[in-house]
Image (cartoon, rainbow, N blue to C red; front, side, top):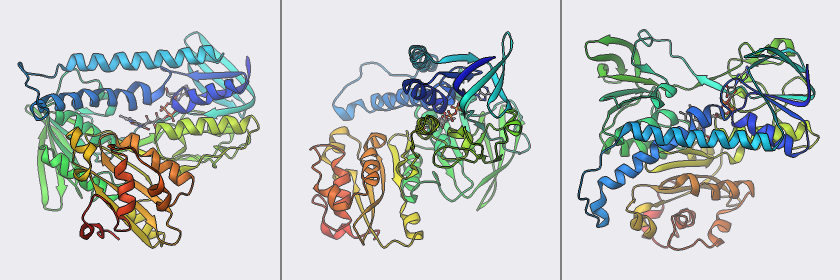
Length: 472
Ligand code: FAD
């Protein structure tokens, strides 16, 4: 029997950050992980996708080198195995880095699969047998999620992939059908399209990125369309079958049934929380199909037991898992902290990037706010022109009573970096006046945020006045 103060089940972003934070606060910590530390994010999620997308971005830039006054003497062609090796090296480096941090922090990492046998006791099946771990203070459940299966005929055919399968492809398919136009689906669409794959995306709802401000999905659909990606919204794949030379999907579209052929089909329709076979009943922890129920201190219904990250059914994002991990162990160790979801940024690493924080225009309207909405197009930004990247915009959603910012939505290079100004403004309940009074460097893409706030008043400096009233 190993005795520890805090045990953490699962070493993904939620679990490893919880372990590091607890150790830094002076606690004795055991972390149980059955695979590589870093979880989905480092191994088969955030990091490998972004590594591949970066290769795609560089390739696209090379292909239009002449637009920058650069003449290429030879051809630039994608070497997919080399691109994969670069991705794997980055993953290895980061996983090694997390292992080192855990070691330096004195966290005891136990390799194996854990389950509850009592509210404060885990049994871990390791390569050498079984080990019992008693946590005298708390246990944090951070077991993450897995791809949601789609109960459709034919999805067990060879060539049907989930995101992990798509990341590990050893050659590029000629034609790829992606089921699901959410964040994961569109990132893969952008990636494979860049390398010349014929990509089709089928989305059941009425737009891409249905969880984000409607203007973002519309902009992305336009960009993907320009690049030759076929997008079918309000459409459902009803069947997949193996045919000579590939797969055939039947797609129910508003215009009728459509047969679509592809070499590979990627299913990206969401993720299910890993709540099964954890002995949660032995611990008395409440959960359902959407995950383990927690409050904003990440506390489950059982005192001393916390849950964080994808397994809780909250936003399935690595940064939410990481912050959840910090909040859980801080509470376990007597500090009262809370997870504030108001400032969660959603970032999509397509080219251009897409990011949003706070309320979409539709959500703000549903809540009954009287709105002031400003939009600033990137083709009016000097910095965007110098980048040669003028597709995109910044959209500010504010309310009129106090002039408070409610949401910020961006399609632009580095949108994922630019969005944090909005997060901080939301955390501080800042007004559009305060955004406007904040000096933004020139020339930067960040200036577009200030200009969008000005546009909400019809006062953007670098736009004709007549164009500034749309969207109010
Ligand atoms: P996970 O990362 O799923 O980790 C859970 C860990 O627990 C795993 O290592 C697992 O092996 C271990 N485990 C489970 N059960 C047990 C057990 N019984 N015993 C021992 N160990 C166990 N999010 C972003 O914020 N940005 C992105 O760009 C992004 N890109 C993504 C791209 C893809 C393709 C995918 C699939 C996801 C992406 N995500 C992204 C989501 C992100 O990966 C998850 O939100 C994040 O990994 C959740 O962290 P977690 O700690 O809750 O769980």
